[in-house]
Length: 109
Image (tube, rainbow, N blue to C red; front, side, top):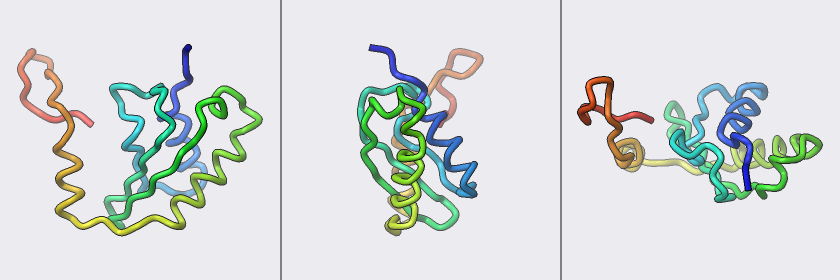
């Protein structure tokens, strides 16, 4: 089954609602249409993390975007603090991606 780009939809909702410091960590860039319903949002400025479950079917129904927006807003409002050490660990836990030269020189998030 094909899923829409959930990552793009969530990021768009965050930006439309003024949550400009929030970043979609899951689904990640390598798998933006993941079938996993769990979503993780990070705010590196305020050092906060939000987790939520959004049913995959909701992303296939544009009429549900209002409900997705409400869930995201509640998750952001009830986010939990993240220690800097945990934030750094999260950032560098991604597998290295090959760069233009084919070597694994840097992280790509």
